[in-house]
Image (cartoon, rainbow, N blue to C red; front, side, top):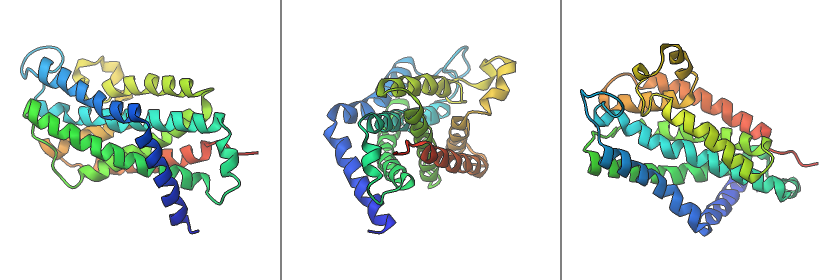
Length: 247
């Protein structure tokens, strides 16, 4: 079987495994919907006011999409790798031609499909509930793909280095929550302390949020996409390298 055939087989197996986990399916789509209802429909934005959510509705669209681009691959890949490691499944995979890179590629592609569907749902709800102008550009697709690849790599590392599946989920939440709110998504940089501004530039999610925002508000989206793509390649390679090596 060719490399493409091996990736396709693992992809189909992972996809069916996801569909069988109905709780995971539900919360993958329910959590971002809940966030939009709370912050988009109930809290609402107040341009010209003071405090949080004072920017135009378009400013927060990348943050809503970032919820699924960030949390879904971190938690799914982290818990999947930890579960496979604890069940010695990587030792069984070592007896097959499937390489670690191919395994991660297959699971990343599944996440691309899942998160693509979830992002579409998020955009529809944002348009309906907030009236925001959507980033309807073909460049949105590579932004989402690059973001998913990047955080799948991070998730693979979390699953490889944490002690258990619960530890991988806890680590993904501990990393995901600060990134979500401190990466130029929901909190404008001018509301943060001046000394913290350089740290925003260290977050990969910053380049996703800023780039997606330019698709609806204007600006050059290619520079942020280039940085995000390079980071995606680097973290994907690190994630594949970190996967447990069977004895």
